[in-house]
Image (tube, rainbow, N blue to C red; front, side):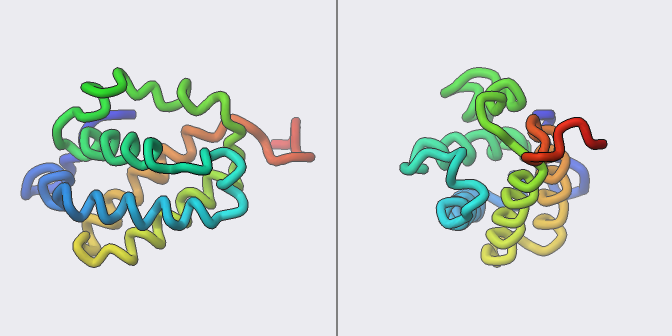
Length: 139
């Protein structure tokens, strides 16, 4: 789940987006997360470190320097998220915040935004670890 994205010509997605646009995306994303009623229960009130971790993770995930590995070790995404109840609703809310942040970050081109969103949609689906309340056992 942490292989860098280099799906098209022109270098990695990180090379195409760049660190400044990625930082802007993360700031806009967490501003939305902080206001989302589905997400605030599973996030800390102070999102500073969370945003730093997200930036570091995305940098490596998109083909840039392995900042997350250097500072925090292997991402172990699913294991690190297991203590949090991530329902399908929360995964969709997370993706909604990311989609809005991508649209609000004009420094990221449309094709690159689509590529990033598609990759993060797969990650979000993988992070779901809790059924919707009242839907246990329903498939």
